[in-house]
Length: 229
Image (cartoon, rainbow, N blue to C red):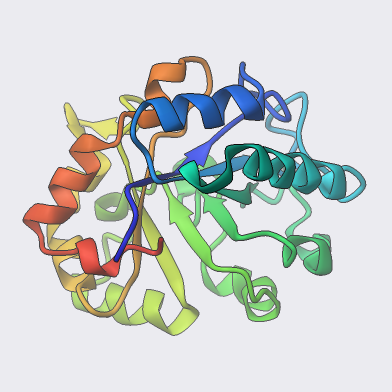
């Protein structure tokens, strides 16, 4: 059975405002069954981020938070990778270090507006990673405009990528959330592409457990059995 989870939260280890312990406590208080700490990794997009040198300490802090939480919640270790090559050296990321994680998130894939690289350009890295990998806060309807929903589902399935439903107010176009605009794509994902829910929480602890709309959307599309966690 899938867990009610938020798989996209930032801590003070990158550009978030709260400690990992504070995030985990809020997730428990908010009734979540799993939480993923997914700080930015080796990008010039933010002033502070996790690096190849600090990732072991980062993972240790997350594992310590899991031990403290016991069986009240599952605490996952992840990172978010910026696919803009001007800010992140995609081809030289430490694969061995990344494979210690429970999941790896990729932002701006195929997104010309934000300078992201294509899925094909990520092929070398994705083929080396064994940790689950996913696309986050993606405007699917825009960045994959030339691909039919079923062809996109086949493409993502071929790379083993999951796709996030992100409920943050930031990820809207024309007054609607990216995932709402891409409903036809999510319908095509059923049985092919795994999905997740994330809030990209940074500054407000209340956002840690604000996942209801995402789960309602997936429930309406009968995709709850396709959740990655």
